[in-house]
Length: 135
Image (cartoon, rainbow, N blue to C red):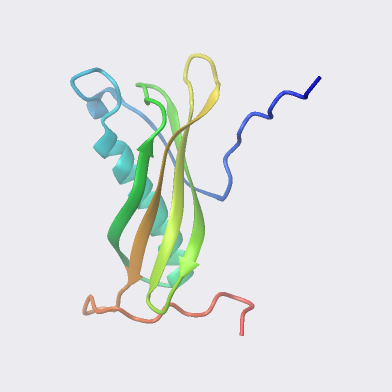
């Protein structure tokens, strides 16, 4: 007899939490994918900003996958994790999870890899400083 698979849980840093509202719905009555993507961009951008100690611009998104729908009233949480740091760029893995408003069940709804570039006051790429504790 094999043990049941453990329920998946979020990993990374909790970078954003909000509630899905009726104004965010598409014509089918579910939360609009563009709204969810913007929440994920805010979460990833916040993580990138703190890592780069300053402004960052989104330059690309890879592998956007919508795993499950989001409904009005769901609590949406975005978790972020640095996947790669280059000279002036960073790739941040972002997962969106919801806590269903009726059942309280935790569900991963979306995942993607967001790419950011650290920029200076003239919107030119600038180096990402070394991570704290690195040489």
